[in-house]
Amino acid sequence: MRDRRHRRYRSEETTYWLSYSDMMAGLLLTFVLIIAFTMLHARMDYDEKELALAGKEEELAVSAAELDKEREIVANQQQQLNAQQEALAEQGDKIAIQEETLKEQHELLNKLEAIMSEQQQKLDDIIGIRKELVKDLSREFGDSDLKVSVDEKTGAITFDSSILFDYGKYVIKPSGEDFLSEFLPRYAEILLSPKYRDNISEIIIEGHTDTEGTYMYNLQLSQRRALAVAEFCLSDKSNVLKSRQLEEMRALVSATGRSYSNPVYENDGEVDMEASRRVEILFRLKDEEMVREMMEVLSEGDT
Image (tube, rainbow, N blue to C red):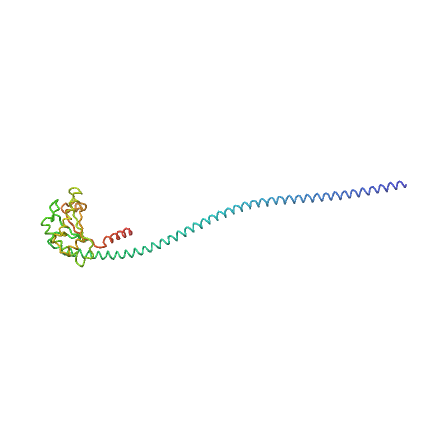
């Protein structure tokens, strides 16, 4: 019986230890499962964080690329801005130069306007003097027996060369000498009068021919005729002018031949041969050429 109890005790003891071992194994398994689950959960969290980190890194890379592009754009814009600033600086320099040029041109324009005003006044004076002089010449010779014509605009006096010369000749005829002896003193009396003398710059004797013959032949003939008239009134042997008139006329008179460069035309356009053979006496007023050139410049400027 004792052995039975002993066996039962041992059996109970064994059963107890087996139950305790199972319980411990179960606890151990539970701990293992908990640890495994925890590690799995941690791994999953880690993987998620890895993925999130990879996504962030990709986003950062994209952002970095975009930032680089923005920096490049900013750099280009800065270069453009610098270029624009340089261009503006150049434009500023050009504008400053242009303003200085405009200032100089404005000052020059004011000077030119003053000169033009002065020249206009001179022109008005010259026109007035010429009108008076033409009027006096027309009054002196218009109703005279001398066959001369006075140009109403210029005051040029024209007379037929047949009065002075035979056809194709340049020696003054006796009748021509009589004509000049009467004409020249009266002409000089007007031009050398105190009313006009200070305004006369030149008196020109011009010889003209018809279109018959060569230009050079007619040039020589017209020059010799003009010189013959000048010699008749200005030579030391001449008694046509008074000594004072002779001295003053010598300072003013010039003689030239025009050949047939300025013929006279009839109404039908044909050359008037007889009228083209002529001698003209013209006068020029002081400052007249300068004023004429100035007015031509003004006229071109207005155009």
